[in-house]
Amino acid sequence: MSKFIERLKQVSQPPAHPMGFKTAKTEQSRLKIQLVANIRGTKMKPLTKQLTAADALVLPMLEADVAEVIHGAWLTRGNTEEVDQSVRSGIDFVILPTNGDILSPDKEIGKILQIEASITDVLLRTANELPIDAVLLSEGKENGLALTWQRLMLIQRFSSLLNKPLLIEVSANISSNELHRIWETGVSGIVVTVDGGQSEAVLQNLRKVIDGLPFPSQRKRESVMALLPRIAPEPEEPEEDEGGDE
Image (cartoon, rainbow, N blue to C red):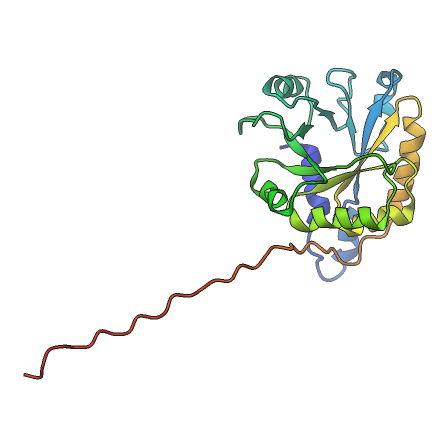
């Protein structure tokens, strides 16, 4: 099982609070929203082992030795050949396009499906039945990933219709208030794209922001599933005894 997927599940479905003195200890052990660093640039390789501020890294396959850090790959084709190469290189998870190959169940690797924001609600619900582990909301970059009311509604829509962990992309300069709002919608992880040469400082700053966030007061994970009317069959009337009295 993917280590990163396990962490996402712990964020989206935190354990129930015990009663008594164990409550404080449980609160400290809870995981906060996960930070995924999508590293780009030629200066990436010498830095990967230093990027401990991130919970997971997304790297080109076989680009760097990051055995000490959970790492995955963002696949462009998502075919079986790419996935097999990822498994051989020790990748923990992959981000897959929706037009990629259907993977066989023996691919023991975390599968995150990248789904476009324009998908209909009906199709989005079907993702709950697919053999994938999490979903990454794919949005246009026209707004620079700014958090507007419209975008917040979009994120809430995905979170409400999915029963799998949800990840979204954010900008490197996201504020504490914006990140807390995103976490409250039910998002389990954020993906930030950073240049290799500046990644360490950016990730350290984001780690401080996340560590300082309070846990959401109430996780609104109720599904907005349509309630279809069910017509109960009419009870059968007992058959009359047509025979006469003897």
